[in-house]
Length: 69
Image (cartoon, rainbow, N blue to C red; front, side, top):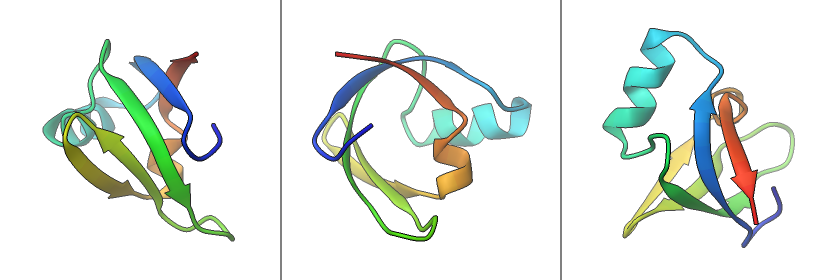
């Protein structure tokens, strides 16, 4: 995804720990998220979930499968 692009979460490609951690941040299947920014060299990715802004690691962000608009 590019900065400013929206997508709907379809599933996670990680194990139970990754799924639990993402869901505790409000990221779950069916939820719409917006990518705000990312840092070069595999730094954190900033996304907007509902009214919250969350920064997650590049590896964890890669485990979120999306349906983009």
